[in-house]
Image 1 (tube, rainbow, N blue to C red):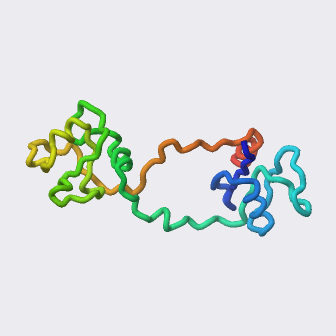
Image 2: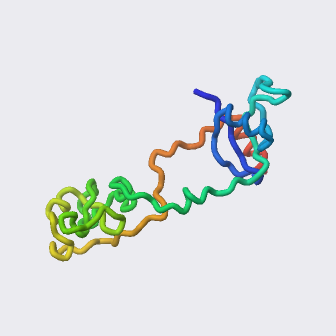
Length: 170
């Protein structure tokens, strides 16, 4: 496993884990400083030890493009947004995405025209609207501001990094 360096901003907020190489670049470019050297760390450049924790000299700006960009539509995104619940029944878990206005009638694959549905309900509805089918939606579709990351890896800290965070929190 590669060594990872904990990157903090000037307000001691965790940003993310970065490679040793990236952390050293922050230090060499005077954008950060080594707050905690790695155990048994060798010198890498003119008195700079291999870091375990680097603190940036500033608070990075939030990347507007990522934060304010609309969530891109996807089938998986619809299932996550709707929590894998069928919009038509309560009997089964949703495993397909249904077009409220069917594609064959001009309905597009958009957040407001798609809903999670179980396979039997989706097949039964076929090329009809919910009104034509006679079954109302249990909930209305919406455009999500964000989607939770499934399988997001937890922050994997070394004991030294955990101790460091505990000390600065005290």
